[in-house]
Length: 164
Image (cartoon, rainbow, N blue to C red; front, side, top):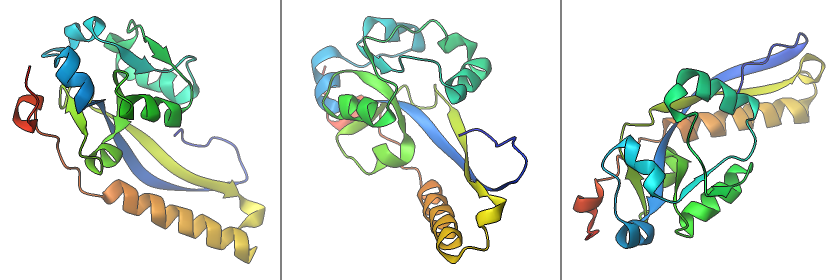
C-alpha cells in the first residue's frame, strides 16, 4: 500500500483501492445511521490499533480523522472486516468488498473518500525465474481485476430497508 523506495525491486503500480465507512445492516437497524462525520463518535467504531505506514499516510491526507477513538481495535484488516460483518460497529472497508456483500451498507457515502495505492513488488533478481514471474503476473492481473470491479454505491440506509 506504499510505493516501494528500495533499489533492486521490480514493482508494478496496479491502481487505488477505494475505502468507505461500512456497517452491517443489523448494526444500523439497532443503533441508527449517522448523518454526518461528527456523529461517528456516538457509534461503536472499528479500526486500527497501531498506526502502520499506510495509516500514517492516510492521516496526513485526512487530519480530520486523527482524533477518532476506536471501540474495537485490530491491526489486521481481516479482523476488522470480520467485526464489521458481525455487526460490532462501523469500520473502514474496501468498496469492492462491500459491493459483494448485500448486508454491508456504506455509511456517509463519499465522506471518507480514501484510496490506497496498490503495488505488486518483487526483487529484480527473481523476474527471470518462471514461477516467481508467473506469480507476480497473476497477482498483478488479479488485483487489477479486483480494483476495476465496478463500485456499486450502497444505497443510503433509509433506501436499503433499514428502519430507524
